[in-house]
Image 1 (tube, rainbow, N blue to C red):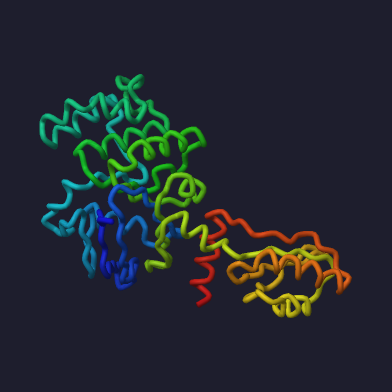
Image 2 (image 1 turned 90 degrees about the vertical axis):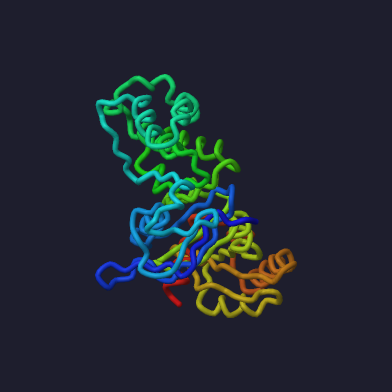
Length: 313
């Protein structure tokens, strides 16, 4: 698949501190890609470099094959939404979009009504933006980012600080743009990423931890994992579980009063057999089984596991 965004060895230092460190990543054209990481991981810096708002200390990046450089030729390919967009409060939504469109080809001003309808602001188009709610400002920000008719949208926390209705509206706009635009957006709301993103890229301390199609990441992270919960187990139970044929790894137990829970990594095709063996083992040891099921993780669980594993390495 053609890469709309390519980053190779992207590095950014501020006063000797590396905010980005050798980041290499490709963003597929037409995809919605969630860019994840803890606060301070380098997400906003990456987006600003791609938008041409700051320069990398080292490495290269390109948008649709056009190098990201001081000359800024790539900027015609990019629409950018800052985390907290600001507008002239006395301007209406319609006036704001006409003003932004005036910086581009004059014919683009004729599309203002189209953008207002896309982001659901037609009814509020003549209200001063100073009266807009947070969700309305975010939607207007997306419309503004579309004003240059870019092929790539860079959105920095587009649903941050919004109530559930505002988040829903922003995600709905992103879904409408799927395939027509490449959307590369940072967020800390993992549930939103799971709902709308085709791909996920995770960074921590400025370094890429993983990048994969969302469904592949979730399948790979949950495939062949059993959560076994037993009453009155002890430290020797983990050793016994590890000896069950088909079990490759047993996690350290989690304890809640007298219930012990273990995550078992199981070889392909052995899940059902391991479940039966665990039930027999518990019966022979006189332990009550309160759980013996294949584990299903959401993206937040997977994200935390990946980041914790990376930091422990």
